[in-house]
Structures are given as C-alpha cells and as structure tokens.
Image (cartoon, rainbow, N blue to C red; front, side, top):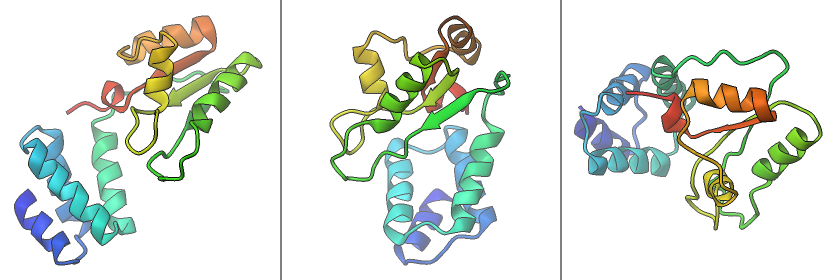
Length: 157
C-alpha cells in the first residue's frame, strides 16, 4: 500500500483521506521500513499536503496518542520548526519564560531538523530527561511548573 500511495504522490496526485489513513496505520503498526516511510513523507511534502491528507494523518496519530490528564489552566507551547529561517528556538525560550513567570507550561518538540537546535536539543543541554512517560511528565509539571514531551513519548504504535 505505501509504495502504491508514494507513487501516486510522486505523480502529484492527491490521496483520499482513506488512502492516507491506510498508509498511516501501516506506519504506526511498524509495517513499513524507514526508507518507505521517508519516501512517502518526502513525496507528500514535495507534492504539497492537502487538508484531507493532513487531517487523515492527524486523526490516525491521535488514535495512537497516550491520553494525558492535563490540569486546568495549562499553557501548551509547541513550535513548528522546519521553517529554514535561521531563527533561534523561540518557542522553547517562551515556554521557559512563561514557566518562570508562574504559568504551568507543557512544551512539545523534537530534535533539530533544519536549524542548529530543536527544543529537545536545548532542554537536553540543560540537563532535562527527555524520555519521561506521560505520568512522569505530569509529576514534573506538578513539581516545577514545566514539562516537556517528545512526540514518540505520547504517540505509540
């Protein structure tokens, strides 16, 4: 399925929501190789993802997300990354400033893909444990007012 859908994307044809979801289910189940996954995602990005394709991907990933009981009033900050702008990691800086000001902040992020450092790189350099379970993250949030989660700590195949 993934090869057929990758070829369709290479031909610059949009996928239906069902086609996109089927490929995502294959990926989330671990039934695709890293090369197949990279090829599919590259073809999708090169073609330009449609709202239908993005929505289908998000729906499947949400189905695989570990539920987290977030407290009321929690501020959630995430940067988009990958903008090739050469800017610094403003979302992580903003999250830490907000937490220092007394807000309870959950930050999501990853390692750098296109810049010198992503949120995970910054926080790891500061000594943060990046591999906490959702329950451990909530305990850290309760204690410090700040927590960080890598996507693969909250989205499981």
